[in-house]
Image (cartoon, rainbow, N blue to C red; front, side):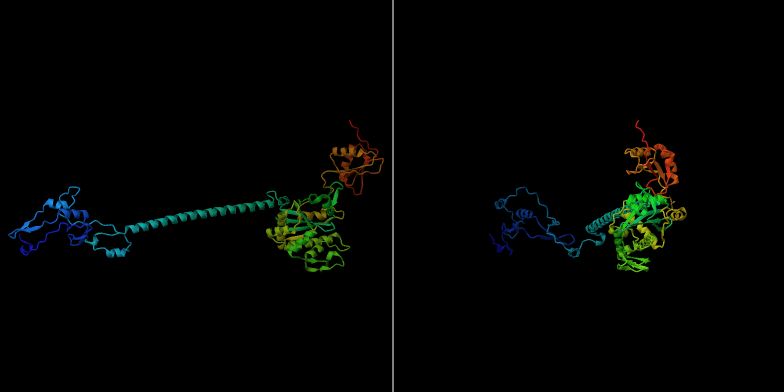
Length: 539
């Protein structure tokens, strides 16, 4: 048998049966496609194993003459060395170059420029396609849409917010306007406020102010706001002016009326006598006048007499006589109440008017400030003129005063306290728009007072019942008089003569019992019961 070195210098080495079998993963083989581009091929390890097991190249042997002979391996010789495939193997087709499967590798974020640089050159013309970064555009489109939707939502919410704010502002403004209008109408009297008196007086508002000193002396004046005439007036009222009384006397002087009939009765009496409605009462006692002038910082007045402390001749001089003299709070009170020895009450009344004028000249014209000032003074307001209404009156007076539309005058009164149509009629008509009336004639009903001089205790009660049944007003009286034989019915005003004669018939008295007298009496008719009076018998 010829050895390998003798066979035509062709070396032959027997192939190891396990030489080509590699159980581990082989390196990928590189193939080239039809265009000469290298392609990587990763062979399936199971496929490679089968190929190695069953499709190895046949071994070549040479015979004794040097001719190559194909050696057919005994299948039974190699069979024990290998495991049989679990499934029958199909005929193997020639291996075609295929594109290897893409093995998933961890992806690292690479900038687009780097990806483009690392990508292999395409094997086709690039002008045939248009590459679009669809993912980036979609992201930008989504972001733009979100921004657009968000901006629309914000604008819609902003419009709603502005609309709510405008509606709220409109409601608040409407409420304020309505409140201001209602307050103005209330003040002017359209809603029953204090201005209703001004409407009744033809656009005039009349209020009375009473200055009371520590000794109880009262000085009064009317404060008139003429809105239609755009002017204001201070009408000084003498304390001797007679007003209708009540009970004890038929008339009361104004100086005593405040204590006798009160603030309300005094207003009613002034309304009756002057023919003009008086709306409210301002009680200005001297301590409150002191505080008022102090809060105003003093006033200036043309004084006609030196002002001394306590109005005493030897007192400390508080202010001299002269033009535009500055008066402190204490000096203003002293000057308003000063009456020199031998002077009439009209002189003191005129000084009070000067102080009122000085106060109105420095009074604030702002309603809020005036109301705060009135509140700080601390005076107890009359129900007819509360703080806010009083502040409004003072503001109107202050405005007219600063515009030089304020006049001050004193009401002309006769010595007996009555008003004369010739002297006071024109004045009352111009200032108040009213018509004067005397207190005695102003009474709506005839007032009757009964004195018992019959000596019978029950006679007065019986006669009182007869007076009331006659439609006359009986004044309460329990006075007794010395016993006298004949009864009398006395009167002072001729207008009451007919009423006196009718009353005599009702009481069963003779006509001669009716007598006119000149003495002052507390009623229109005074009945004096004598012994000739016979009470009617009970039936």
